[in-house]
Image 1: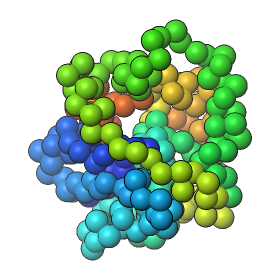
Image 2: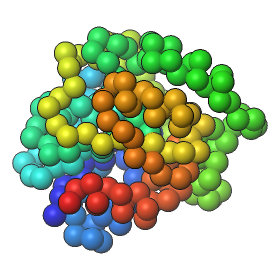
Image 3: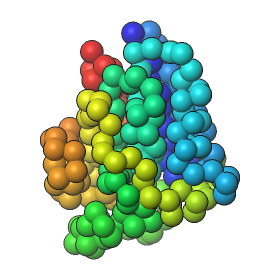
Image 4: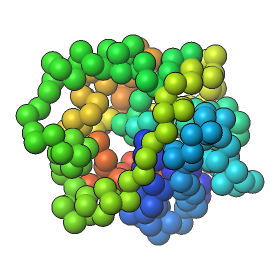
Length: 220
């Protein structure tokens, strides 16, 4: 059985992975989900990676799963411990020396977002979780935290992608990272073909059982 280390995105909390974690544990896997120090202005990439590595401890057979902005932290974790797989779920794929603040324009996201924009009311629910059950979405938003700008301004510290097998799972109805553009970015930056799942930017809330199925299949 695998150990899944689940990394949340910007201003999020570990408990928003709870539905996926419960599914994985029900199937016999171990799960570690941690709150990154996103409200701490003294915390940068080293502290983000340290938090995950400390939580994993001496567990083995580790699969690192990183969502959205968490994809900047996931590879750093894999560079520090012997993970056997890295899975990015609707992840921002960093390049060496790139800051998260610059990523949006450097990756081509801004142009793609304008071209593929979908009309909606501009609310967080409409942008990030338009297919999540309303009560679940409201609970998730209520747990949101402030995201410090500190890591946003720090260059991503690795010289190259870590030597670990990597999978990318894009969300076809994602209004944050448009699917057609993500397909191209994954090819350009990782040299792989993205796998796909239906739904919005937050499949751990909209379709946790299906996401657990995908993660478990990756771990086989």
